Length: 531
Image (tube, rainbow, N blue to C red; front, side, top):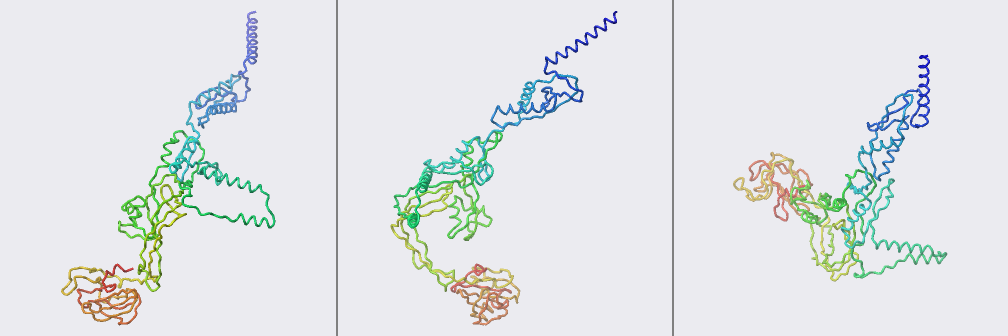
């Protein structure tokens, strides 16, 4: 009896449990039965934090995508979120999965707490190798307008952003325009439309019409009719603007960007020397001292260093990051010089010239088109002038023949006595040395420094054995203290021809060559004329 009662109670408990499970499955949608097939329920971890349970991996990934999308909709900025998703699986007979809203909400909380960095929309302005980042296109316009307004006192010019046709990517560049130019373009477009609407002529009438339209009669304007002032402006550097995303800390304040772009910076440039230049004039023109120019150029030893036409010098030029090129029509009055008139003389050497007429300055009133790069004048073109007094040109007669050159008369040799005043090396020697002494062993070959005609070859008192040569440019060279003379008077010799052997004859203190040069009978330092 008792056994039957226990059996009945167990059956009733089992029946009740089955009914409870059945009704639980109907009433609790999150309660899920699983098949016996390995891991069939997963704990979901996002960035190491448990955010719920799901039945499969795809559901967890879908929830994470939705959470990330919903967060991104809350802001226009580009946000980097850490999303390290991990799942731990287990096998259960039945279990309760988390609701979608709960899992997505917890995921958003975890993501929001692990934001790495907000990337905001920005605009990068590139000028050569210089870049600056601004927060809006409005600030870009204000930056570029500030560069223009620096040279536009009438606020007549503006900056327009246009698509760069040469670039495949979405890159903007700039166009500087003025109200006057815009109106002129409108007039030209209107005229083109009007011309297109007219019926074309044909035959002989078309020939006459085309000929008439091709004739442009330009009336000469008076000085007072020119529109003086700024007439054209553009940027001297290529400007590129691209949209980008970056941390807010990488953006520049507009005021700082304007200062960086428009403030003059010291920039090294190459200057090519032109005729008439001096170091002092070059330095003054570029706001430098001669010492600064010398210090920047290794080829210059000091302020007296020689410069030649075509030499390239490094100079420092103050320029902003964004250069502005402009043209202005200017009126001024000035004294001016006429161009020098040269008369060539084929019988003279290029070292010879004579002024045949002295110049006299004239006076004129001028309208000129002046081109600037920033504050530097790069070109001036006179487009209208009224001369009140004509300038008289300077007339110079000059030679065209290339003058002869002079070479060292011996190979080697040591300078033992220079040109000019000296202490007499021995009794009877001159204290005003008319040449230079080159110490060399007796018998050294002596060459003609330049081609010419021998006027003396033989004994010459204090010179000992000596040779005089008269050269085509009127100069004379002398070679003294020789041991042997190899030419005779009246003989023509060429440059480098062997004419004697060195020695120790005449008033001499040892084996050497006395080398002398005279111009118009006056002794000069021959070392100054050797190539």
